[in-house]
Image: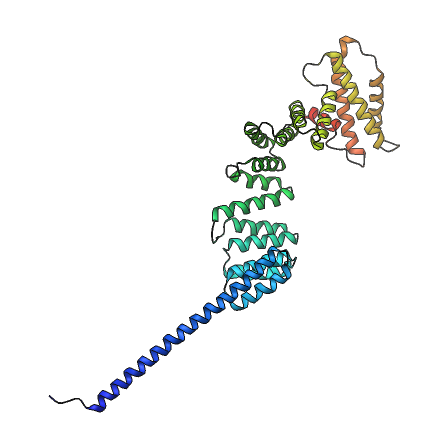
Length: 369
C-alpha cells in the first residue's frame, strides 16, 4: 500500500481549517447582526413607547417626533406607521396623516385600521362620501386582532357619521344588520332607539324603547324616546302619555316638556279626535279656521291674489256665522276644508315657510292624510 503524501494531507487539512474559520466568522457575523437588530429593535420600541406615552398626555407634536424616530429604525413596522397617523390626526395634521395612510394602504389595501384612520381624516376635511367609502373598507378589511369587535365598532362609527349627515336611507341600511349585535345594556339600547328615529324608522325605534322599558321600567329616557316615536307616527295621544310618564320620572326634562305642550295644544285643536260631541267638533273646527286665518293674514302681502282674498273673506264670514244644531256636523267639515285650503294658499303666497312642527301645522298635516 502506497502511503499518502504528507503535502496532500497538509493541503486538505488547511482547506478544512479555512472552511471552519469561514463558518465561524459567518456565525459570529450573523450573531452580531442579530444582536444589532435586537438592540435597534429595542431602541425603536423604546422610542415608540415614549411616543405613545406622549400621545396619552395630549402632547401629539412631541409624540410624532418620537414615533418618526422609531420608524427610521424600523421602516417596515406597520404598527408604528398607523400610530404615527393617529398622532398626526390628533395634532390636526390631516394632510400628513393622509400621506402616511396612503403609503400604508398602497402596500396593503386590505388594512382595516388604516382604512378607518383614512376615513376619519377625510371626514375631518369634509369629504364625507370618500370617508364613508373608507369606513366601509375598514368594516370588510383585515385586522390584526379582535376582527369582529373592531368591525362592529367601525360600523357604529359609520352609523354615527350617517346620522350626523341625516342620511336616512343609508343609515337605516347600516342599522338593520347590527340591530341584534348592538350592546344590550341600557345605554346601548337607548342609543339604538334614537338612531332608528334619526333614520326615519319610528316603528323600529318604538320597539327598541318598549324593550328597554320592559327591562328598565323607570327609564325616563326610554319614555321620552317612545314619545318621540309615537309623535313622529302621529300617535299624539300615546305620545302625550309617554311624555307625561317621562316627566313623572324627570320633571325638568325640557325637551319632553316642550313636546308635551305641543301634544296638549294639538289634541285640543284637532276636530277629528274620537269621542267629541257635535258642538265641540264645531268649536274646534272654528278654532282651526281662526288660527289658520291669523297666520295667513300675518304673512301675505297687502295685495293678496284674488283666490286668496276670496278664502280670507270666506274664513272671516265662517267665524261669525250662526250655525243651527242640525247643521253643526256639516259646518264642521266645511270649516276643516276651508282651513286646509287657506293653509295651502299660505304656503304658495307667503315668503316665509310655516313652522312644520307647530300644533297648527301638525293638525293640518294629519287632516290632509
